[in-house]
Image 1 (cartoon, one colour):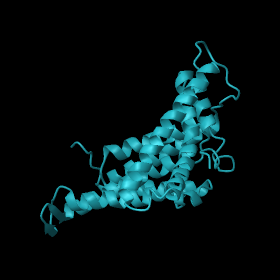
Image 2 (tube, one colour):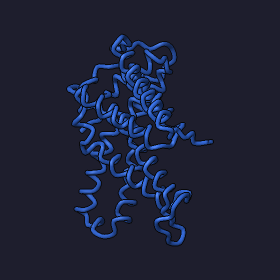
Image 3 (cartoon, helix red, strand yellow):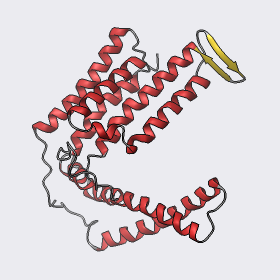
Image 4 (tube, one colour):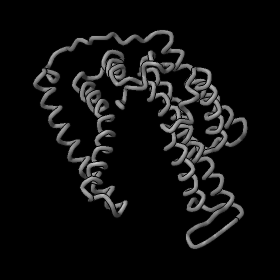
Length: 259
């Protein structure tokens, strides 16, 4: 399946991708500044509410967001086991110290990872690569050469997924992938890397031959609009960030990471 296959029927699919990216920036800044479970927890609750209201609720708990729900608890667990010990000690074994402070840090880390990654992944699923390129070039005025290169790379992500599946089946058919999960994965990853380099070189040559790297101002087939809807999306992102920060301050848990 190509990377843009899910976009057309999704809510917010017609919104300028630049606005979607900009909407996640204020929340990311707020959550990076502080390490506490209240701000991240409030942010997650607001995100779930917003995504449900706009019709993106099914994506939140789909298999495409599964890596977030797996990685976040593992990140929190590592902080629980190896975080800076403080307060009452619940369990200790070698370098592992499970204390009251490490539990709070683990909870805050887990919720912060979810709060930052969830909107990024869900909104990315509603972005068509071509729309993103149009927005970067026409709204942000980024160089056309960079934008077109990024677009070509995004278009190849889906191909890489298909290549990985094909390599796995081919290696299994030849009997070279029957033993050793780690060895099999490393060998297959190296084969995919070689294939990606070859395909990238061929694509770069083809794009140069078609004049994509020519100097001068380019024209674009589709106009990227940036209107009231886009500003509303950004305003919602700012509102969620402000709500999370205010909740943490009122609860007395606002904890600037460098203080």
